[in-house]
Length: 396
Image (cartoon, rainbow, N blue to C red; front, top):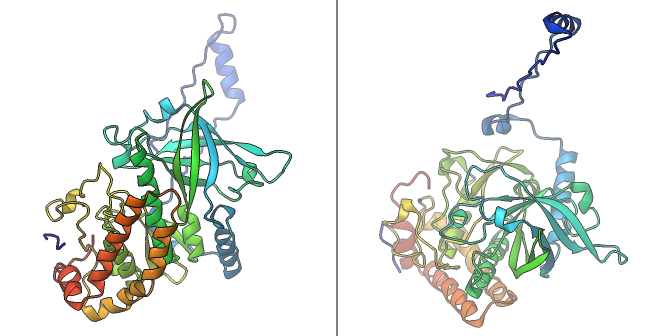
C-alpha cells in the first residue's frame, strides 16, 4: 500500500463605396458633417490580483448572497432528477479544443411548478470543458457546462442558476454509468467531511438529437454547484490564481482537503497550477482551497485512469494512495484525522445509499475507504504513509 516517492481589438473595416454620381466630393462632405468618433476602449477582464484587492460587499449583502446560495432548490434534496437535453451532439462532441469558446444552443426540459405545464423547455447554451475526458481518445462524450437564462428558470428546480457543470457518461458502455455514480459518491463524501465542498445533484439524463428529434441515449449525470455559490456559502469569492503555496491557505482547511484527496486516492490536482482547485477568499482575507473533478481517483478507478505526470514515477497505479499535501507532524495531523474517524460511519452510510450502484462497485468502494481508516487509525501507518513520505513540500 505504500507508494514510492502532476486590446488586441478586432477593428471593423469601414468601406465607403461612393456612387459615380456623388464622387469623392460627396463622400468628403458627408465625412465633414459628422464628428469623428473614437471607439470605446475594450473592457479587459479583471486579473485575479485585481479581484482579490476589491472591497467586499457589506455584511447585509454578504448574508443575502449566502442565503441565496444555501437555499438553491436544485440542492435541497438528493432525489435523482429526470431531465432531457436536446442539442446537436455531433457538433458538441467534436469540440475538443481546450481553448474553445464555442456555445451550442440546446433545450433542457425539466418538470415545472405549474401542473398545467408538466414539462418546461429551457433554452440553454452548452460549452465543452475538461482535460483528460475532453480528449477524443478518452471519452466519446465530453463534460459540459450549461448556461441558463436566469429569468426563464424561475419556476423550475434550476431557479437562481446562471451556469452549472454537468458530469456526463464518458462512453456508452454500462460500466461508465457506474463511474458517474462513483464520482458522484466522491462529491457526497466530501460534503460529509466539510461544507467547503461542491454540492451535487444526481440526474437521469435523456439526450436527444435536436435535428432529427431522435432519442440518442439515457444515462446517469451529475449537476455540480457553481464556484460562486460555493464561495458565497463561505462568505467569500472564488478566484483562480496560479503560483500559490501551501502557506497561502488556511491551515485547517488545506490539511482537511489534502487528506480527503488522499482518502479517495486523487493525484489529479495542483494548488500551484490551480488544476481542479479554486481559491476562495473570505472577507477576513482567509484563503481556502475548494476542489472538484474526482474521476482519476482510486475510489472511481476508471479504465482511462493514469497518474498525473508530476507523480507518475511515484505512483504505481491510481488505486495506490499518495499523500500530496503539506508536511505535518503527527500532532498537527491529529485534529483532522480525528474528525475523519468520527465520520467513518456516516461516510459508509453514504456509500450504501448511492442509488443504482452495483453491489460489486459498492463493496469495492467500501473496501477502499476501509483501507484509509486502517491507515489513519494506526500511529505507525500515519507516520509511514503521511509523514515520512513528505519531504519539505511547499506546494502541490
